[in-house]
Image (cartoon, rainbow, N blue to C red; front, side, top):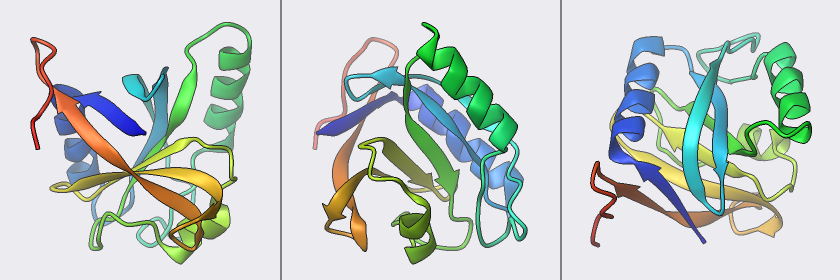
Length: 143
């Protein structure tokens, strides 16, 4: 499995992470078949947004409803770790449902993609997936 995202969109998300620091930024990723087609920024309503994130439940419910009614399919979520690695935390694992959705974690510089699963390799909740970017002409980054 891989997550494919445009380099321009990844730059936008990294800027959101930088702009939100020291708080965590968060939002919803749209797309299908591992390809991000868009995102929706959401307010971080966590009690301590510098250490945790919680997508505004009203935005989450509205977006889930829209998706079920033929709107953009939800691929997963993004959030930032302003002062930490782009690896899920134990708190992320405790918050994640094993729904196979993608979690993109950014820190303003680096990014990594994870899939929320039952019995994952990270805290029994996440498996790492390849993060790949494509440019304006649709080309992907070679490893």
